[in-house]
Length: 88
Image 1 (cartoon, rainbow, N blue to C red):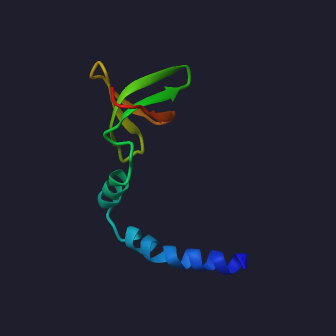
Image 2: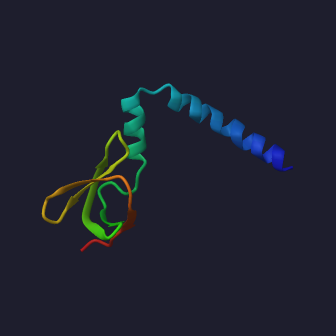
Image 3: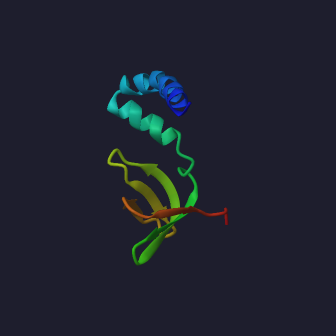
């Protein structure tokens, strides 16, 4: 039964994988970013020994989260715990 469920799940994913594989690098990145709930949200990013609070404005092609803090400084973050904050 497990194998049957696994096979059906994989078979259902294949058309989506095929579609994504056909996209250019830029189009794939755009699709990824458009699916993120974090972009446009106020966030706190907890880093090792510090934190950044600001608005998540994008994700670079290198995968780093771009956050503009309350002093309008730009941060490109590759590792950290992102917490969505309530609007002020």
